[in-house]
Length: 511
Image (cartoon, rainbow, N blue to C red; front, top):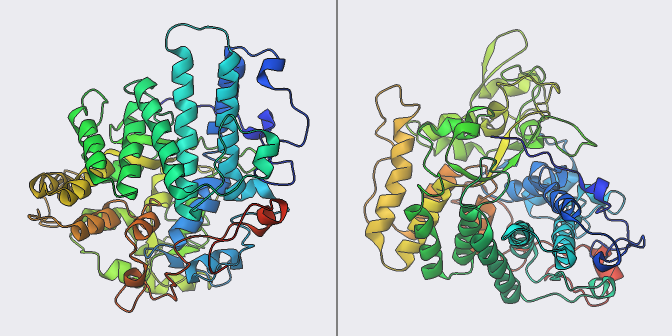
């Protein structure tokens, strides 16, 4: 896969400078119709919007850390880690949690970072309005990219915070600073409209899947429909992708492990949309922090000093996962190699360093970066691809929607495609009996398959929220027991700093 050379947002002046994350730059800026705008200008602006994806505040550290810790698949390992992380794990989040918005360093918080994505997309759309005529479809393709990334940013914001200020390309600076919270239903209407436009104008496929094509827009559209319970529309979108898999160059990767292998994944047809880390450190903005957060101290299994033992599955995640399921060994490390070459069982991890917890650790991020030279000893300078959407998830979206509209036989077919791949392992040995084919698939079956197939890919928390599984997931029979309060914990607090600067913003219940 060709590397997409992101131009970081700081180059474009897209960083948060004003008093509020929702404000345009406080520095005076000419509107597009007051300056020269050419195709290079627009391409630079949209590249700046996409440059926020590998930033530490997005999946790599801020938002990725938050969504994983709030799921029932991951708990805090190192008890001395920062309180801002422990708060999410225990559902004791303060409204001023720095992961949401750090006033002294907003670049590293995901509320302002998501609105930076929105701003970059909106600025692109404003520039396109004054761009001179181009060859047929050129402006529309750029608009498709802009509307895709704007929809993605809002898709995260609305699921995390509920009603949010919705700012589009017509929003003025003054409007942004006094924007009210837009109802969830309206936000989704706009998200769907953006993904639909992107689906119409983006190309069928791309060699570089850190840029969206039609399949990416359609897949996220199907996911959005599933989230709001429009199951027929989710089914239609997902099955359209399945029927056009050849056109879109999509297929299940034969070996599940290769999806997360930093080099092999470049040759796979399974990824639909990814964050493509490039193994560099530019202002700490393109680092693969999930590798460091999920690794453990003092081991040389993948790189010399290992990670930080922050996000570690509960023991129940490991114990309830069938040993015959190949995905278990791809996702979890229950042994480690120390710096003397000794192999230790997970019950001995704390002997490497007292900050390690004696539980199996996540290997999906540490191992997939491990076959490349590591300039940074915690694995942060990797060339990993984070799977934001892949073909297996499309099959599971189709299966869940099919169950909801009474097409259970089709759901069986799609979920069994995913299970067959898991049974085949790396393809060199006798297939496992686990996971066995299923008949009469239920919604609960699909959710369980998503939990395992998409383990640690920042999907589980959103499944818990959309299906209101919190009391079950964190109750006495769940994988983790947490003091979960369904009256408030499905949403995060609106940062108080924003409320203080905007009299029209209100706080979510319970904060």
